[in-house]
Figure (cartoon, rainbow, N blue to C red):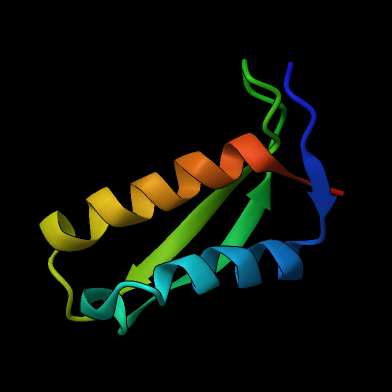
Length: 78
């Protein structure tokens, strides 16, 4: 199991949204919440919800999915 940095929900939302805002096409999108969960098979203990205002799913999903997947390897909720 990989050791992850422990962060608060607010810190994790800031991290996710900072990555999201690097993509001009997703300026109207935002991660709106993270939820604590039982650790999955990799040890990650959270999931995230994104709101994509006016951005088609086929545009936002690949990018938000990549952001979440990468963050799940680096962070856990405190």
